[in-house]
Length: 298
Image (cartoon, rainbow, N blue to C red; front, side, top):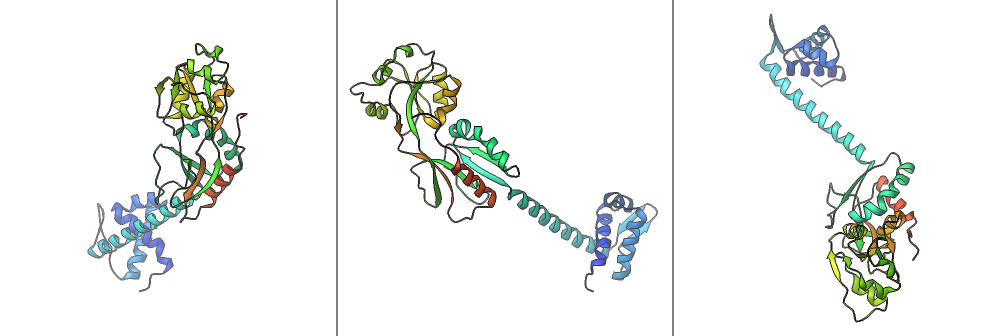
């Protein structure tokens, strides 16, 4: 016998009744009356020509035929629920963009701009991971990354986002900072550094300061930590212009004399070359590329 659409309500009522072993509980789950559930089950029994439940004074119990159908109906319902759940998740994921980037850039440059993106794209949800290690773009991984590097990575499409510039900063309260009149004067201060490829030696050479050994008294693995150390008066730090902008605006750091040198590495937005960007991710890429990039007078 071919399964007809008019049997689907009866099958749904039977599956619930079989799971609960109780017509009243099935009726409550399905927002029906117990007599309606009983009617559906009898209709199914009549169509199949078998008895699915044994009725007795204390309730109902499945017959052997009923157990066979209950197992099949339960499996089918679980499969359908799984598909429906997957479809809902897939629909939701079309509006979610998963981004991986650096903590320092997220905290000082990206987060202050995200309200602009939210205002123009209120339907897009963002997940932002901040990691030092290069994240793999496997299935289920991030859609996009903002990376600091040479601008090209195997297997990734990269769009140049912005350049990076380095210059010295310090807290206005750092002892001796008021006496710094030129780049050479910075050498009289304790220095803070991070693990970037370019550091104080590169900047001093560009500033035409030679023959001195900088007192790099404090070293941090993270650029934000180095800047915070400078805020607390540990020493002068060599800052990246995109990251230091909010500190300068707040007045907790001040720029010291000397040039701003262009860093060898810049920022790029990247994504897997073999995968087509979903519309929400494409919107985020276009928004990033269109942002004004210069915050500090260089």
